[in-house]
Image (tube, rainbow, N blue to C red; front, side, top):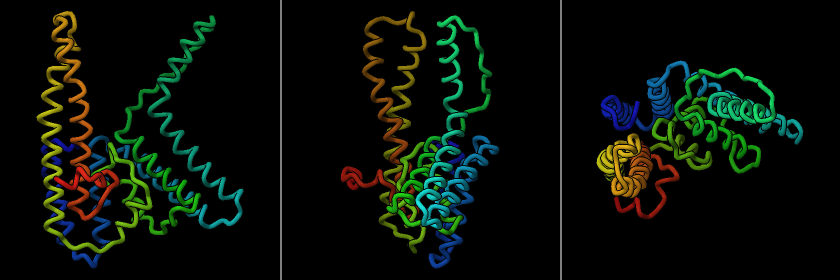
Length: 276
């Protein structure tokens, strides 16, 4: 489910309405609603890959609990290393295995060795880098003592899977976002309107700036033999605006949605955003 899709434009208002229909005092119920919504949001791409998200969540949760439980430095380090190895192994398998295997084959062929590695046909899970590094960041913070261990699994699972910043960031530090899921917040009209304005500006950057520039850039770069130097120059000048519109637009939509839910992610701190 993309931010700039009809399903999301139906999904988001429904989740907001249900969220604020639950009394602020029932914080756990609100968090469970957001957790269910986040997994539904992620499973719209490939339902089976929600198991990877859950695996990363469970591994880092158990590792952090172990780090907090043991006083012995060796056992604490074992918990940390196990979390790092398991999560990075999954990330490597899905994202970097084919790249590394093809380059090793080329290097070995250059040395006169014809060795072929099996090719992975697994689809790359959406957002795997973002939620993996966010979860690992939590484990490392607990190990360093900069974040208190979270004992409630469901609150921690929401921190890892919170849908506004799940698939493309920003990657949040646990000591910023995690405590916000424990705060009682009633609906604030002014805060919600700031979030809506951010979302509208983000949609403008994405749909008007990025996508319109992208139409021309793709037409030129996908058929170079049909264009001349002037077209190359214009497409090259428009390409940075396309990239900026994509990243800035997505970020503003993500920040705006978190504002509407009464949360703040790291990307909402620059003073420029407070003018929106």
